[in-house]
Image (cartoon, rainbow, N blue to C red; front, side, top):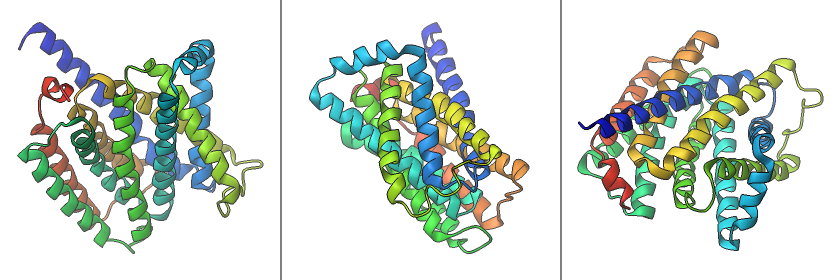
Length: 304
């Protein structure tokens, strides 16, 4: 391994560890934000993240937005819509199922990233990636079979699965727009767009605005934490990495989120996983690892 390859490997490992750790607090913090409605929590996290990035470089973000073509602006809005629905489905699903089940099903995100990279950039999955898809799907079915135990509900599982599919598309947009504007400007515009879409949905969603005036202090802390850690740090890092790293490396973040989130949920919220959920999570993670380790090299992936 050359010196440059070692540096690249260290950078990739550092990205995976830090982004995975940032994502891991998402589930527990979202559960801690109760009784706020999940849709309001989703709005709060992206709105605060957009404001924070805008305060850092409002003029630069405005200049980047002005330079975009009409098609590129539409693509940024689409990315914001994908992120808004992704967060809405994930947080709403988490509110309707157990923390371990939701975080286990989030392990399907790597497979969504790999498949979207194949469809939109021609990065065809290897046999190992195909085997990983089958394993992870089997694990997801096993997790879903535990529905009805405690907080675990099948309706919540389905929402979380829907959010994972949208995550793959959302990462693909970040890759497609890598030459259109700087990473920080892209993140700010996507978060702002997502906040606008969620704000439009709040008045028509039943119960979405209940208990928000004034919100409980612990819920405010939770939403601020969601904005700062998994959104501002985690998602911004993923958007930046999706521009130049292979889809497989970007996909490694989600298994780290699952493992870290289940541990945090058990220690902090007492959300101890059932035996079925543990077994399903293990199979999903094995499938994700098989797919990721059998993926193409970064150079081959970047060629698409």
